[in-house]
Length: 149
Image (tube, rainbow, N blue to C red; front, side):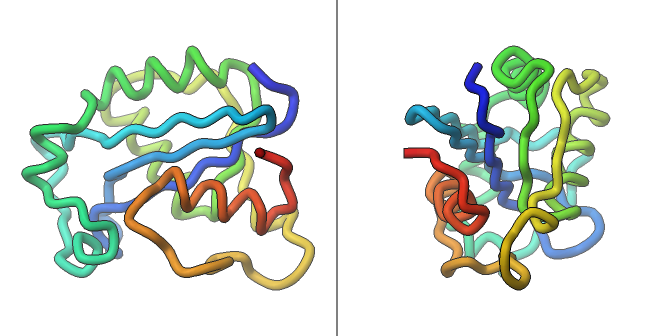
């Protein structure tokens, strides 16, 4: 575990209220990086073709290659226990909370909405999003002036 906050970027299944996490990318100081595709739960039915085009992650790919949602939560708890995980905005925080709630795992780390710590403007699009949550986490960390490399 490192002392600087972890910076997390979440890709969502849709741009609607029923969104679920598709991919998570986390970076931190010292070169730390972690990412996972999330295998959707059976009752996660919200899906958006526009989101799929943006992230280049088809639902069938997530089912075949994604990590079990319960395991993702357990890994996150082990990696980030009692630490701070900075997210892009309230939507990303909601997606992570939904992930943990839907699999019945209690979060052992703190979510911090990073928009409040940005020096100028709304960093919602520091640079165009990519199809890689890990690369987006690097970009977000730079927007928040966090040293991660």
